[in-house]
Length: 484
Image 1 (cartoon, one colour):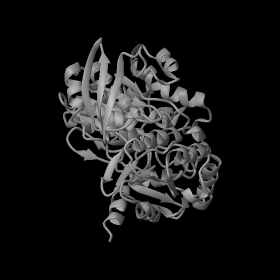
Image 2 (cartoon, one colour):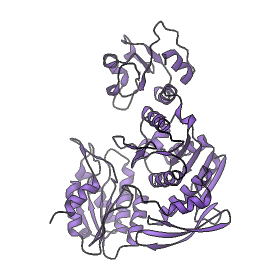
Image 3 (cartoon, helix red, strand yellow):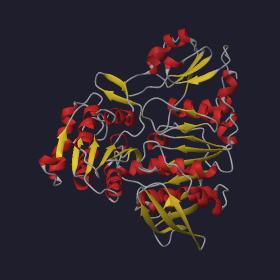
Image 4 (cartoon, one colour):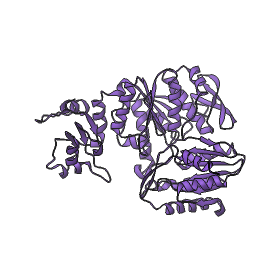
């Protein structure tokens, strides 16, 4: 597509310069530029893309998009001036790839916790009758195979999102389930995506280092509901009314008697539970291979969304019983003589729910390995430690992507908060190295105990001050369990 055609289609901008190059890709990371790229030279907190235009041109970029700056003087390639380069990226990438979202039925799943489990559940329910792609933190599927994105983003950057949607469409998918983080919504990573349905799980304080206030965080999450019009919303959550006001059509779920999809009760059997549900005045029973009331809510959200997207009610309820679980979410690594579980819980409320669910099936002690991320919201640390102190018998505080922060200082903050919450000194272990922390935890375990490894899930890297290293929580745990 010619640059002039792309600008007109994506941004309604005219381009009348003598040079009108052919664009092969839209790129905002200069390291990914190839011949024919349109480079979106964004200004970030630590790096300004406008400072590397010469390198961009050398790598093959034929034009750039940027906000005004003295850095653009003498640019070695044509530059399109826009008011907001970040906001322009998604529409440009979408237009170049033929607006794939417009040819798919796209469901966005947002909320503080439960996004990944709900997204996986919904894909499972939809895939019984249509090829369904999934873009999520714990694994992504284009409808045929599996792809992965590096880093810790729940939702990748706009060009990658659009590329994924194009691949899903080309693979024959008709449905897409897409996790939508507050960062992605706030930073335009999902610009150029048309949503047919929004699913919202809950809202508790998180990412306030970025959003600043809960009101800003709420607005970012609620924007998905505003864009979709039709929304599946958690009626049990205190913020339900705020989200319902933003939606055109509301389908509610929860334990609340007024919910459209209502949980009537459950019977637990190990980590599975038999659910009794009510919808449209009818009652149903089914199995769910996940523990805890919070996963009952995730299942209800997925069922309500699946029906809205065309899956017959009875088929959706029946198919729920076949769900095999989510990688890194209450994932069992070993069941005897003691159990080892990997879970992504990394906020205070999520950890509290995870510990409550695990406690219900623990005969012995509950041993927890947990950390807190560096260079992220410090306000999350005390609630994490408080949840740990309230729910675990033994706690090993360790690293969780400390980045440039001092790990020992983070662990001391967690220790202090845990003691203030009522933990005893003998319950606490501080170990900076996460692998060693896991070794100590499984070494302390006795028959009947449960070891919960929380915070990392299936993330494949561990970020430290001296660099990023490969990481696989499940394999690290297995390596220690297999040693004599």
